[in-house]
Length: 96
Image (cartoon, rainbow, N blue to C red; front, side):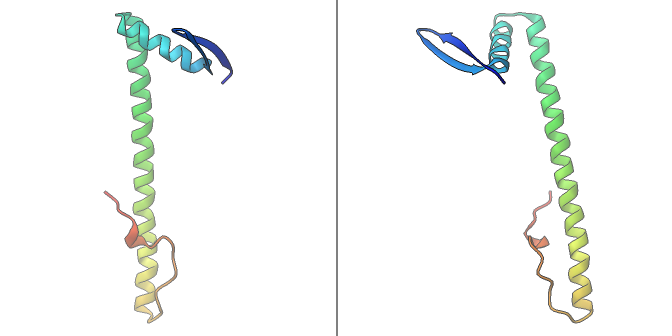
């Protein structure tokens, strides 16, 4: 994440090397460079797949949490006990 100086018109700014590489790829892709276009599409697809995987895992965890805590609430109600103090309350989660 080392910063380097980059000239933009008359202005010089510092930015991470990775950011400058990605900007170059976008510029080359916009100018019709097929290799840069493929690399960018691959990068976007990888990030999208990672986002989908993460979202799926969060949703599965939330559903599991609702099931487990729901069972605790049901057990307390069945046994005549006051509701447990669980935070967040399973009813406050929106799954789906």
